[in-house]
Length: 150
Image (cartoon, rainbow, N blue to C red; front, side):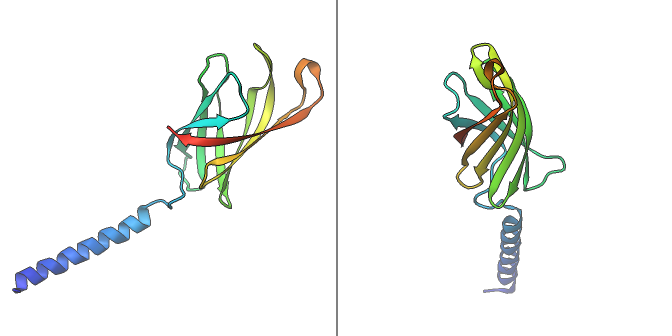
């Protein structure tokens, strides 16, 4: 092997090592979320479904997501909030203006906490309301959900 071929091989090896090192530093962990749209699969709704759009927080941080929720049916309301990652679980706390569905066309506001596992994207919803349907007592409701990448 001549000196030119040896030098070229050394340069290729150095470049390969540099790219591998950069990829390992810049690549997200295997269980990380992906920015984009997610279907919200839940036992909560009979007549409606939502999808969530994940955006980076400003300033961007690995433990922060901006979430915008959009209903697939026009008579439900949009909501949005910021989710934070701690101990492998995301938590989104949000006020939903029509979170407690009483009758078609009649709803009450709720304060909700959505919590889900970063790896499985499955979790729970805790929905609290100060006044129930038809001026009923305050209460809480609980459901499960999962996020599926669209």
